Structure formats: structure tokens, C-alpha cells
Amino acid sequence: MNATIQALFAREILDSRGNPTIEVECRLNNGMQSRAAVPSGASTGEREAMELRDGDIKRFRGKGVLKAIAAVRDEIAPHLIGLDSTDQAGIDARMIALDGTENKSRLGANALLGVSLAVARAAALSCDLPLFRYLGGAGVGRLPVPHMNIMNGGVHAHWQGADFQEFMIAPYGASTLREAVEWGSEIYQALRSELEQKKRSVGVGDEGGFALPVSSNEEPLALIVRAIEQAGLRPGAQVGIAIDPASSEFFRDGRYQLRTENRQLDAEQMVAYYEKLVANYPIVLLEDGMAENDWAGWKVLNAQLGATLELVGDDIFCTNPAIIQRGIDENIANAVLIKLNQIGTVSETIAATRLAQHHGWGAFVSHRSGETVDSFIADLTVALDTGHLKTGAPARGERVEKYNQLMRIEDALGASARYAGKGAYIRAVK
Image (cartoon, rainbow, N blue to C red; front, side):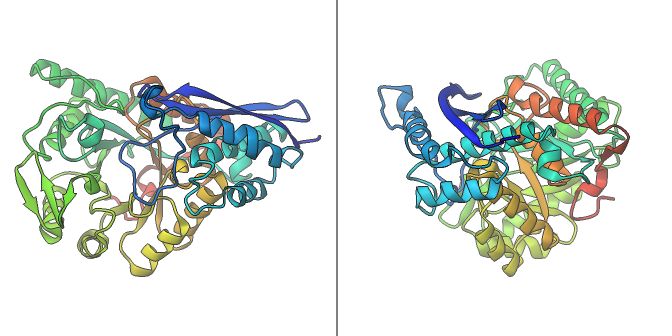
């Protein structure tokens, strides 16, 4: 069948925070048609590929994406019409060359990614394959441990809660992905009940986790352990905890400024603080423990905790293979966060993941705070066999759609489905 690109169309839609984002449709000559929507982050790394926003304060407070839509219509589409949709790397390379900037700022990473996602999905349909199988090949079958962000702080809670941005549960002791989702939902509801009984806020942050004032960055951990127990599960043995402090957001003048606890710590003190938390709680993964420009602090962190804990770099790497390679060379972490819109194309995202895996690092796929109901990352996680992903609380439609898609994939895999469990992590979980 002729799988060449016949048409590309872009439109402006709203993301989960009520801000505009771009959605792209791809139509092939064989009649197949697909659609993909692009997410947007709140706490972003300095080296992320650049979204193209309109800057017109009279419209969507400057956040419109009509310029990105025009880039798809006027520049990208004319150069891709007639190309084979299954040549993902070639299509992405052509867009990158057309943009001509290091960070995709001319045409916009949001424009490039929307096209890249839509083309991949259309090609999968043309090949009569589910997206995870098209991207990953015949051998895929491992379902990831879902990391559910059930308490929000930092930017995601508009600084109304903890300094740390995300407190996640990891139900790695489940026997299937479906059971893991069930456990996550039960823990989430147990936490809600606990907060309601204590007459505390059950308002949620951008990613669906409860966002409430706390006395310290340790208090959410204690609340989560209690919720795991209330759900009839065993902390550590069946359910672990992952944290994303997003420390670049509270790193100022060479120190980590913990507003919640009214103190400032240098890198060594911050690492000692994490060591205490890891000793007292079943933490299996720490993301962005140090700031994106504190490479010396990352080295200290990895030296102290890298042998026993998965240390994930997000803002410091920005899903960029060149930066990831530097991190590998300098031995500053042991895992990388994977976000499609940080780099801007599907093929570059795959390259970043494969680079990490080739060097024995973990790869942890992630959503963004400004999400849509597009579930591409669920398929991507299975396709690349990353073993774990985070995509928010087991609440809010744009978050649960990824978990729902993973359960559909598990059903589709049937007897060949395997749940990653404790084997998801680059460092052994006891």
C-alpha cells in the first residue's frame, strides 16, 4: 500500500491547564489518517527544545500557537508531502534541517513534534500494527511500573505545598499492570480519605496529586506510607516511593533554599538530607535531586546514593543525546528522564533512550504538567522497554488515559505480557 504523506493539518487546542497547544493530523495516500497532540511543561530545563508561542498578549495571554500552526502549514507540510511515512528518521531529519536551529526555535519544537507523532501513528495504522508494536518490533511485551504522582508541591502546586514537586507511588509488587493501576487507585483514595478525616485540603495540582500546605518535605512521605498501609499494602515490599524535587526550581546562589523548612543547604547538605529520607522511607527513585547546572553536586549525589538508588536526570539532560553522553562520561547519574517535547522528534527520543540503555542506564518515560488525552507515551514506554513511566495521579482524564492505554496494551499482548515489577529499576529493589 502507498504509505506516502498526502496532507498535514494543524489546529490549536487546549491542554490540561487551559493553555493552547498544537494538534496535528496526518493523512496518507492510502487513506489512513491519524492525530497527535503535543504536551507542554511547567518546570522546564534551560536546554529544552523551544516551543513556538505567538507572544500576542491580547490572545491567550501570549501563549497562542498560531505561529506553530503556520509553520506546519507553510513550511513543514510542503517539504514532507510525498515522503514515505514509515521513514521516521528521514522525516524527522528533514524537519530538523528545515528548522536549522540548535533548539528548534525557528519552527518550534511543538510544531516538529506534532508532525513527528502524527506521522508515526499514521505509519503504524498503514502497517496494520498497534503503535507499540510498530515502534518496538516483534519482541515487545514488558509492561511498565506506573509511577503515580499522588502529592504535588513546588511549581505544580503553585508553591502552596512542599518544596519538592512530585511524590509518587510505585506499585512494583503487583503481578500485572492492571493490578498495579488498581493498587495505585486504592492508595490514592486512601490518602484522600485520610486528608478528609483530618480536614485538610484535597485540592489537586497540575498532575492530579493532592496539593496542600505541609510542615516539611518529609511530611508527604509519612502521609503516603500511611495511605499505602490503609490500602492494605506493604510499604517497601509491595509499593515504593519515588520523588522528584525538581531542585532547579529552588536552587539560588549556589544553595538549595527549602522554603517549607526555612533553611538553605549546600550540595553536600542536600545530599545528606536525601540520605536521611532514603534511610527512613522506601524510596527507590530520585529524580532531579540536584539542580541542572550543579554538575559538581550531581557527582556528590551519585557517589553517595548511586549504588543503591536510581538517580534520574531530567532538567540536566533534557532528553538530549549529546548532554546524556556527557553525563555518562562524567558518571553523574544512572538514569535519564525521557520527554518527547524536550527534544522535539520521535527519532531523537528513541536515540536518547537507546543511548542510556546501551550504557546500562535507566530510562524513565514522562508526561508533562500541561497534558492532553494523547496516550503516545504509553505505547512508547512499552515499545522501548523502559520498564517504568510517570504520567500523574490515577485521576484527571489526561493522566488516566495513559494508564488506560497501558491496560489496553496488556490485553492486546495477552499471554506474552510481562509486568516489569522490581526489575524495572537500574538499581536492585530489595
